Length: 289
Image 1 (tube, rainbow, N blue to C red):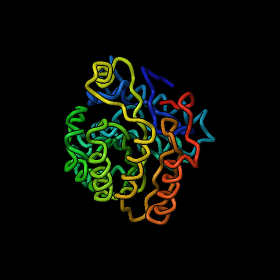
Image 2: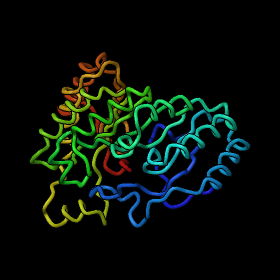
Image 3: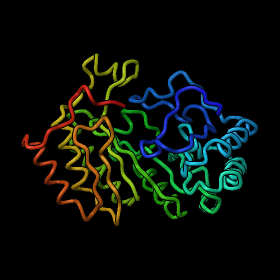
Image 4: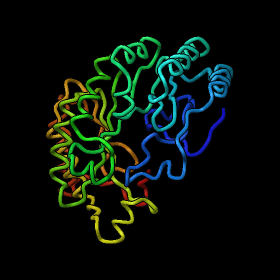
């Protein structure tokens, strides 16, 4: 396989075939993210992508999932992305799930019919980073999009029949807007009603603008109990039809996996016990990105 730069994939794609069709992120301006710094976004040549699909067809016969990397593969022009999906289906027919990252910009560039066409040819799940439902926080971290567009694009890709997994980031608003960030994030999640939600806890990375603001005293990194309070508020404010809410990423202090709405009360009770000190939190040394 031909891999370049930093390979990033969702935790749930840990055992997937990783097919790198793009390098870097098409936005790459978020103040908290260091994943693709120094990398110029590009779409890899079709010849290399097809070589890698042929490689996977020979050497990846046990894997049933495939993830198209990197930061925003949905932005690949429709004809080229269809060519990739068709090649996957033809050469790796045992793959039963194909996923990729998608941001609001790339979803907006596709018509609903184009998204349905991608679904027809094998696209199963898209991962979108909401981070926050609070527009002021989104502006501060240079997300490049506001909550209304996030809601519209999330609904759009769901209407196409593609499953949606949304990531939110605890602690992103600092201390002053912590409660607002949590409340509005829950409300946006409820509006979109995705199949999956993944909550991560902010870990500041040296060299990022947000880390520099922290060192300069312009940003406050909230404490573990405040992260838990944010998580509690988000879950309390989130109403999903039948969504799976994960907070079991290595960055989180309290691993959670809940089916909403069925497990909401039980999960809120678990967080309350953790806040009371009755449930142990993940130690700082074991947390990671």
